[in-house]
Length: 610
Image (cartoon, rainbow, N blue to C red; front, side, top):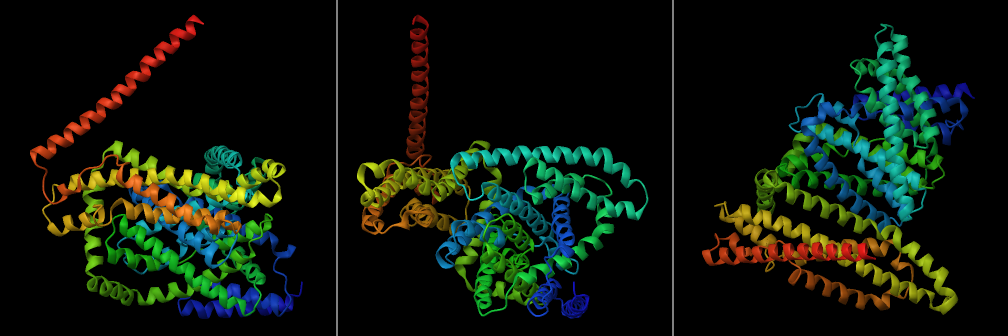
């Protein structure tokens, strides 16, 4: 170890961090630059055994504090809204980032998945610092969403690492079950250990002992996670959640924060050591700007459509571009686990650098940015109309939704997501099966054609099921909105929803075409475009897909109410017609139930005789 060079690097890093702090920039930028200079120009190896213990403490203490920060008792009143925003945001980021990774950046499916993780998480610590000097109306909601994002990232990361690139259905199911069981086991151990042992130690008024508690827990749960087979970061999250129940946990973290900060400095120096200065870094800067744009759009839109006013949602979105360093942690941990995602690692570092600079600008110019959003809002009649419609939908319609409709929507949503995810791992295994069993019969020359036809046939079957679930979601919402519009007098609101819902204007066909396009893009990105014969079969694919959409939008119309009642209450004749139709459907369901019951009784009689 050359202490002369190390002292030069640390002195340079200290000076740069001081300057950046004065101009309100995140000092992480200084640590990363110090790592680049120390490794590239002075030959210091920040990944040597000298610094390994500090890197270990940095990763695990940070994960431990993330878990402790996820305190349900603190975010309980905001839990429902925060989870809704976080899940809608996750859907947007997953779709946009994954497709951008596949088609624009040409990453592998696994690399695109890690791009989603790198784009998702907002830094909770930076948010706290930003809100110290500002009175932001949605402060608690933003921090709650950021806390949920932390947990999402680590659970998703643990899941993908446990899969280890294998996307077989049995593997996926078994990994989910193993993670849930192991997580529950670790949480129970943590809760027992904290309540029985740590509580007693904390009562001893000694700063040295109190500081040693989180460090000891990190090593204990490193051993437990290795024994149980769960990624260390997830174990630390669970241990932190259990530790948050201790009354003096804030005091413990306050005393141990210098150890965490010191270890994080050397961790980011080692992270900077991985970076190589070249012209290709400019490409990562451009991609990093794209990632920040995806994050801003996804959060702002998710917040808007779930009930926040447009101006507030798209102003709050500027705070949420403070991308957390957890993308770096996740990437480097995956690399250490043998997963080759160096491109995502470089991108995560660049994104953290860019977001740190931009958030400092946001902190200074937030009033100007808010005025800019207000200007866009005032100049767009469409945005103002949509804003009022979304507010009415969330404040009047969704709050009064029945448990049956809520259950139906949730079930259809989960199945729809399942249909989207299924092609990501189904077709590669299907093609392998065809190659194994069909090649001896038809020969190698016909394998590609056989795979293409089979993929399209199976894809169309999945697409029909996907479209049916989209139709169920559409018509459930359609019915709820139309019924509530009958109580409204505002003509503009009725006209807006008439345009959105009526088949004459937009209707189900538009939503099926949009969602169907996303579905097929996921399909094509996973494996169907792996051979050239698909191009010849595309016309057949399009024709069958359009026929499915037309059939579903004309004949398969569950829960439908005539859109003509949006403008005026139904007449007695129309009301009678709707009632008779509902009674007939109920009779049909009851008849089928009785028929099945009678068949079951007859079958039991036959079985008993045999």
